[in-house]
Structures are given as structure tokens and as C-alpha cells.
Image (cartoon, rainbow, N blue to C red; front, side):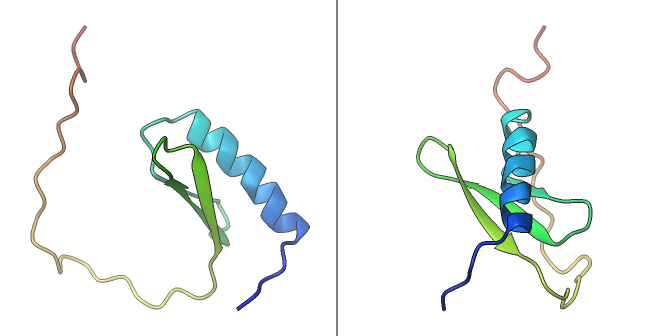
Length: 78
């Protein structure tokens, strides 16, 4: 499937670049209108996959086993 890139996609790319560069620990970014999502990608985490979002199918609440809280090395050390 081939999808054409439009100006809205390019505008979102710029928005996502600013958001992800400003938050190096974020792996995803979604715009306020929820029309696009960006996924950080690559060995150096310097690439972005961008997807257009259509209709939400469902949100399933409390269907997974609780995951342990993530502990990041050096976080909170001052």
C-alpha cells in the first residue's frame, strides 16, 4: 500500500521532532487532535515512524498483568 505524504504529515513531523528532541526518554508522541502518532525508532533512537490515526477501535482497561515500575539508572540522584 502506497500512501502519499501531505502537508499535514510534514507539519506533524516538525511537531514530533520538537517534542521528541525535548524529551529524550519519550518513545511516542501524539498530537493534540490525535490524528498522528510518532514512534521513536532506530539503533541510535534518532529516527521517527509516523502513522496517521483513523478511528479508535477500543480501549481495554486493566486487561494486562500489572507491570513493574521502571527504574532508570541515575534518576532522582542529585
